[in-house]
Length: 365
Length: 231
Image 1 (cartoon, each protein chain N blue to C red):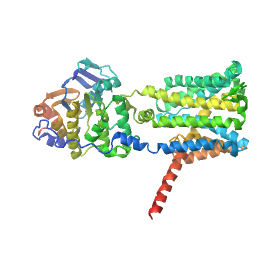
Image 2 (image 1 turned 45 degrees about the vertical axis):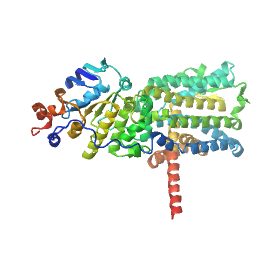
Image 3 (image 1 turned 180 degrees about the vertical axis):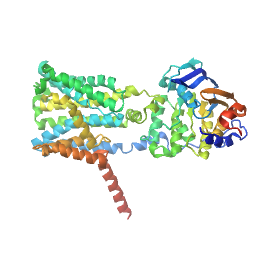
Image 4 (image 1 turned 180 degrees about the horizontal axis):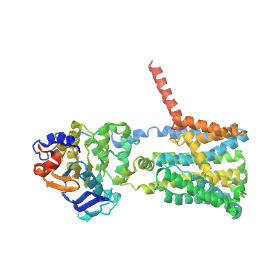
């Protein structure tokens, strides 16, 4: 405290001593709005979002009747990348942590499924189930090691762990097929259909679409739950969250594992729908590209990253004759970061708000 | 309720808190005053577990809690607010009160909402409400779960004179109603004299006076160190 400040308080200090007295004003009466009312009001629009999701889910099943085989194949690829982008984007939104290691969970699941299907005689469903468990198990280990580390250190740690796994896979051709990749032979049915036929996009689409929509629904519900809000609280102010009595480490580990589970699901869909896996799936650029499309789509919404992934796959296909798509992708990324840091999802929200204002003004004119 | 015995905290060679002894009675609002750098906020940090004491002991309800974690202390009934407002800007006021209430088992969040007049702000994001309202949210978060001991670190900082007095009155009523013990660090002396039953004055990490406010404020050492020669 400065001398001047001290002097300011001196005047107050000169006042006669007062023993504690009852407040002149009683606590205000209970407000009309309670905390529970406020929370209920905040979630009033949730039923409309759920209804829109259900309509979109049903509409998605019509894709094989609308699209030809090649665009449908691209759409299947889009769902795989969308799941991976969603897993990375959700983790970033909920915890503020940017992972460059999610390709590891994607690749581990794909490789585990492939090896189990090729060598053990397990049914495709069992191979996929165990593969996803192994991918999620890897996420548990990485989570326990990394989530305490904030910011850029976390990004670097996940990158380093991902690259270790990539190098190991490259040097272990008996497991990974080396840098040539691994073809998978599925024998038997997967959910009532011959698994080997899932390479046909018409057969693969319903599976890929259900996986994407289920993942989206799960992450959306988690974001709206108390757990999701607790993660937001940890991201915003970890110290206050601790002083409120919450343990932050288990919550961060669980968030990372759930996010890793989504990446594992993406790996399972990928291997089922392509019957092939290569070490590229473990490389850091797989995570990096998923992160870029998540940012372009908008990590503020669960739907943003899959939308970004679909747009990316379409762009890549339309410019596939040259490497121009990377230039265009770079330009789009710059534009999005400058104009709408919240991505396409934010642009859609802004446009909708402007439209609603315009329509409202028009009605009152 | 709370006892500090020879509590010391050193940054290298500098002792921010030096052999502090303090006794806080149950149900009292105990003021901790002194010039900047006196070690008041460091004391609050040590009691709340934000910092670990270099030496000395902290006794809470007779138990030694010196090495306990922040979370243990919060669940044992020690809570705090911060000198710099510590809330969640992106969460609505209702969301953050609900989250904090859930873990500490607050049965009546709305009582605190009413007492601190936060009803109008419940649906708004904390980053969008006024500074004074954010300050009250910070205090509300500290009061949730009926903590036995609340440490308030400059709750009136940044508030106008009228806001400070209003906050003091509502706070005093609430802690009396909930029978909460409070350690109050505050520079606004009118607030201190209004709500505190006991006062401790610190200077350069040491306690220089302690007792009833009317006795402490007349001590020459306190006047010289903090209140000013004209007091």
